[in-house]
Image (cartoon, rainbow, N blue to C red):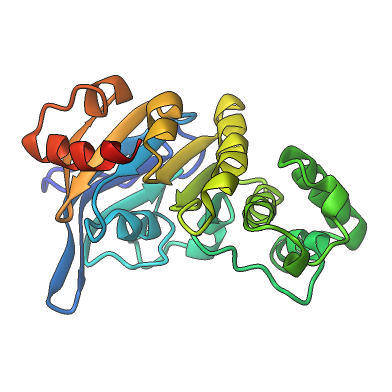
Length: 260
């Protein structure tokens, strides 16, 4: 910390704490969605964010890769302060894979085309290299045999796995997942969660917004419960999900777990 009390800038590069969020606020007009979030994610950790709709979970996730610009506070990714006007945000984003609720695949492209287009346009990889890396990414999600299919011929679960492969093909240092199973039929959820479990076992740093309590309980290193734009409770899943201490967390889980 400097003499004037401000936080010293982070040093860009590899760090054991690749995501650091300090006193983060985000408003949309008069609506304050995030209210002073402080959060650190260690490298290799799987952190699941749970909470009711409208609690700010997705907005927090989108602030991590600057899809939403914070109103105030700091978001530091791999040592780069995304809230610094001089930060090359696009460069930092290349190390962050993000998978959304909707698959956002290009219908006119094959599966492999969807997995290679960003490689070629953003990373400037040659066609042969992009294709090789794309096939490897599809193998990781169990869909190499679908490389020449078009998205319309795939199930929702398969399309979401292609979306994950597309992110993996960019060689990210960390992955953000925003309710990636909520648009899927129940019988297709397991195949997507299986891919995410495999990534966790490989040591991928993951920040996951989810309503899948079983996944959070069994895979997460840490669970965060958010409500009304604030972190209400956080800790290991056996604490937050199995034995929550805060009354609001208990109320939420009592409602959610009735469905299990």
